[in-house]
Each structure stands twice: as structure tokens, then as C-alpha cells.
Length: 158
Image (cartoon, one colour):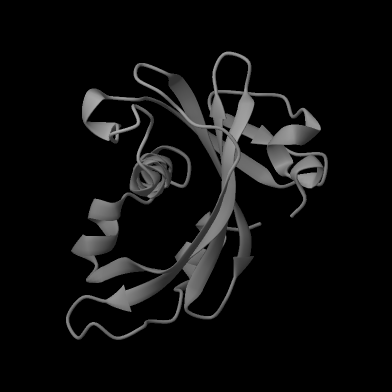
């Protein structure tokens, strides 16, 4: 996705952390703040923390926006494995910065979900990073990929 085509840059209406892009894609937002232990030797957020931020936002949004918490998945013997994570850095975050992580479902496959994301500095909503990640659903008993159940497909409907 080109930056000007991303769901959040089309100016969607924000409603309780959920918005809808011009293309009809549901976009979910989670606000976070940079902590001292997020910083590297150069006094900006270490590259690995951006993936942590996306994962923290997804855990929040799974429960709050999709109605299916990670705990619920685990109770059902299911979990999500990070199959791939791609990120493009645009500007760094620093100590105390407030930012939002925006995510949306780009694609549902038979055993995985591709999630697009942006991290934006608040209050200006300046783009800090963008990318996508693919999460494979796994059976916790055997560690093997599992087909997405219909209730997951309904909750994650694009």
C-alpha cells in the first residue's frame, strides 16, 4: 500500500478507536507512550520496539474491537504465530512521545491473517512507520497451523 492509499491517511472519522477508510476498511487505533526502556543508545526507540508496539495494539484490539481476546483463543487451544513482519521507518519516536498504532485486516487466508499497520506520532498524527505482518493461527496442543474457524472469519471480516 502506498502511504497516500493507507486507510488512516484518507481522513476517516475516528469513533472510539475505530474508523472506516474511504474504501470501507475498518481501522482500529490504540494509543501508547514511549517508555525509558524503549530507547536505544541513540535516545530514540529501538527498532525492535516497533514490533512490540504493533503486538500490544493487536492484543488490545483483539479484545476491545473484535470481541475475541488472546486469552479466549488460548482457552480454545489456539494461538497466533508471527509468520512475517515488514516495516518501513519514516521518523523516530523519542522518550515520552504519545503515539497511536493503527491496524486493519488486509487479507484473510485459510490459516492466517495479514494485518496492515501504521504508527503515528500524536497529536499531529505524523507517520513514523508503516508495514504489515502475517499471523498464522496454530493449535497449541501440537504447534501445527490451524484453519481459521468461521467465528474468526466473521470477527475479522474485511
